[in-house]
Image 1 (tube, helix red, strand yellow):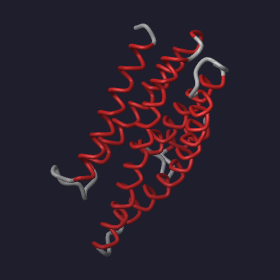
Image 2 (cartoon, rainbow, N blue to C red; image 1 turned 180 degrees about the vertical axis):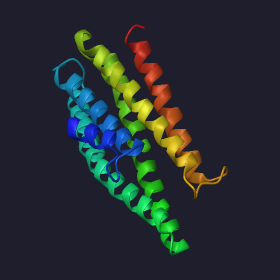
Image 3 (cartoon, rainbow, N blue to C red; image 1 turned 120 degrees about the vertical axis):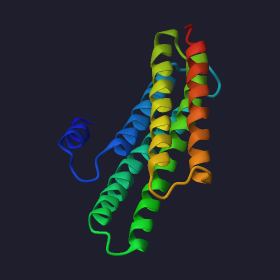
Length: 181
């Protein structure tokens, strides 16, 4: 993780807020997986939560790489905009990756609700914080989608990104409620 945060801090090509959001989703999924693994036999869906959280964690890590590549490509094309089609394609690719990060973030936040409700009491705080992290990542992705140069205010992609952010926020609030706060 420190190498990713170092790359972001140093401004390396392709590292920015989208990469950080994908990393945050992976961390949230890892915490959900930890909570489910640390609560053996507490609820019937525990194994399913472990499996789904692990899949989301791995997917988020793939999205870190995809976002880094898409963002680096978009920055390069914007620095040398020889062809409008290249610009549109590069920004569109970035937009799609951000949407996928936001959707996975919302899915992880929803997983965290079950983890917060059913897990070992000593691990509930991890589930709640994981939901907060996932919600923050979804909201960050919605913001990045909203400022993409190809996005219009009535864009379906923006609407879907905002819906994922709202879904993640609702899940985070439900996880927090389940955690006793």
